[in-house]
Length: 46
Image (tube, rainbow, N blue to C red; front, side):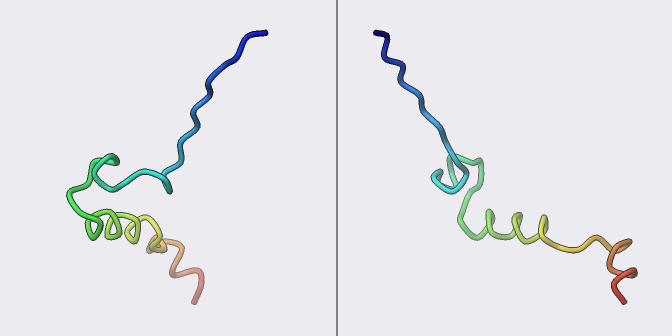
């Protein structure tokens, strides 16, 4: 029987520096930019 080592990673398990950011604050800032509603959709909500 062959045993295979399988490593799965998640963004939630990696530190900010491994993801390419200088600080946790920088990572959080980039995440908040991704979560903002785009202006063209914001107008449709009103």
